[in-house]
Image 1 (cartoon, rainbow, N blue to C red):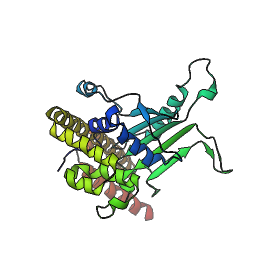
Image 2 (image 1 turned 120 degrees about the vertical axis):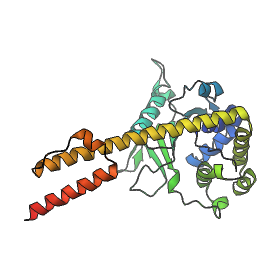
Image 3 (image 1 turned 30 degrees about the vertical axis):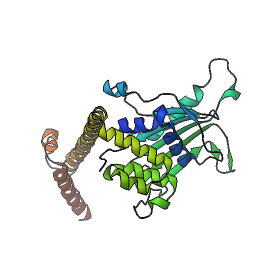
Image 4 (image 1 turned 180 degrees about the vertical axis):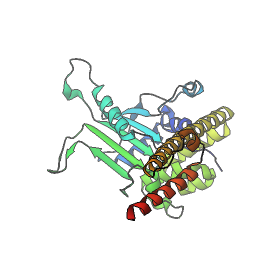
Length: 291
């Protein structure tokens, strides 16, 4: 088993942000963008640097590139749900569009700016479509502003992926399979399932990371950092949920004429205990209201 997750920032940047792996990036871009004329060449503006990870400088992981047609491209991976994600994506793509011009330069020099966000979680819960493309458009009159800004979101969990069908699936589905399950396969079997040349190259990079001591140590360090960050995020959410339920309990106790419990004593309880107490109080209030 390879045991290396492509979604970990160090691996993602190594795979798609290294100039020597530019064909892998082109394969991913073409799978998502589905342009009339596929991308054939790109320049990576912020290439992978091992030292950046060693110094722990990376806060937001993204890969910025420019293709031969002049399009500016930003690709990022988001494993966990974060507040304001869509706002941030829009801000980044607008900034990338605006930053092309120096003071006094002509607007006709502006080239399209495209932001791609790969998601390890569901973003649009009321929409089954896994891939969305947003552009400046007037849907009422079926008119759009071409060659300006564009945002793509790809929600991996929404794809119906299986080993039995993945070989004949679309390229974007194959990439989703790679991101989600590559770590669980032996290299030889993964090569059979994903025979495309871009996947073969990507699997070679994964094998190198798994085998090289320095790379593997950095991978383990970054994976731990990601787990710790997720734990902190979950803890903050749990604390916020406990705070909210505790305040609801106090309010209901006051409405029922009971002595309100102190906030510190309530926060010492588990979320489940608070939920049970809140349910009991709500039922009591409903019972009194109906008599």
